[in-house]
Image (cartoon, rainbow, N blue to C red):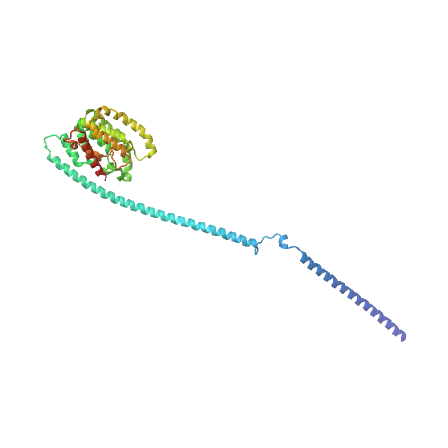
Length: 364
């Protein structure tokens, strides 16, 4: 029994030794595990603390929440605002342009309506006046002997009745020239120099009254006036009375002194280029007047010289004296010279001054 006890005691001791060893091993392993974990945790903390900013090392495709995003947003907002402002300005310009076009169309419409009304009124007035002159002409013709041919004096009277309406004057002067070329060559030449077939009196007398559709017709007429008139003026210089010779020379010299009056609406540059050629053409035809109507005579001093001087001084202004205006007819009318002493320069000058006064009254 003692032996058994000793064996049991030994076995218990062995068990306890093993248990103690096992406990010691467990305690050592647990300690080691705890120490390792703590070391790992400290290393992890050190790594996290010492690691560089990943946002600088790792490329990112997003700028959300960054200063760059704010800058880009501001830039975009500025660009959007600039585009919006530009679009608004463009719309405003378009609206202003539409308003301007609308106002301009309205203005042109009102101008056309006003011009049409004015033209209708003027045409009606002119028709009324012309009808009155025709009635006077018919009444005068009824006073003439039916069995006696119409002579130069009767034609003079008839032309005076219808003057200054070129619509009636042109056919009458042409008829008178056919019947009496010597007496009416200078007067028919003057009508060729100062009127335009198919144009109303005011359009030929005062270009400022022209309507748009009349400009082309007048331009063509004005260019042709000297060449149309000069054959008859030259005829009068060669075959006419001393008065008609002086009148023909005065008109030709006056045309030479106011070359720009025969320019159509072609602009100053082309006009300036044509002037030397026109002047040379006129010079050649005016030259014989040096002997036909010489300086020093009463007709030259009282009419030719002042006419040339005045047209040279005042050309370029439609309201000043022009030889290519039929409002100068009183200078050509034979009735203006009745009883005038052609050897008296002062008397001749009075007729000239009277004609200029009538001319100025006609263009007012």
